[in-house]
Length: 292
Image (cartoon, rainbow, N blue to C red):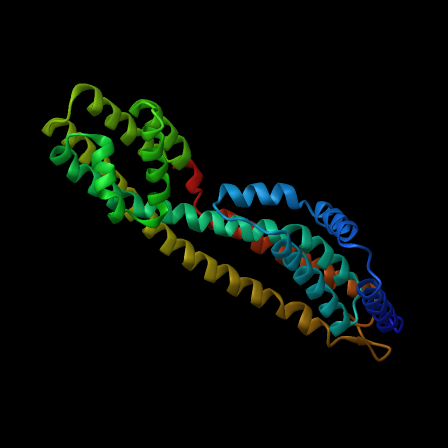
């Protein structure tokens, strides 16, 4: 059962879009309309999630992701003559921006944790020479990784604004949000209070050593996770041979999965199930670095 009217519908949508851009309203009203579209797909919430990951998600970038998801659904619907994939494209438009933000946040979190020990080693190495936490941080600033240069610059600016070292360290720990780093700043504050000596330096170095061990363990777990992901993809690819093989069972010269309504619904549900398994599999196999 073919949807002979689908090309006409797409042509009508294209004509509407052309007319919309040719006879569009003033810029302020047009901006309001774009705002309404982005709000439907949850732009403001996703923007806040992106900012927490250090990414400024522009409205145009968000709408591009939405358009990619919807466009992919329309493309598949036209390619295999199954209108249900348009619904899948709309559903994907809600999830795709969130998925991209989640992946970026996960990657930035890992880089933050992986680069932390080396950056802290520079600061600890200069503590005895400079005898002051702010001076040791300032002398090490150029050697810090880009992930930490910003937070430690804010730390120095807070000191210049007459905040105490204790307040500035609490702000620094709250921004980085890593448990081992919070332990490090607490020990650093104790060092500031009781004085910098070899014992306090040794304590800070032991905390850094535990961070190095954690990073090594995370890398090993990621290698195992990559193998499990490959196995999952192989299983999904093999599972798709089942409907492909069954599609050769024709009824009245019609393809069971492409030309009948029940077959098209089954194929669409099979597709949604595959996407669900891939997404949940990725969440299950990915390390929850937010708990570190």
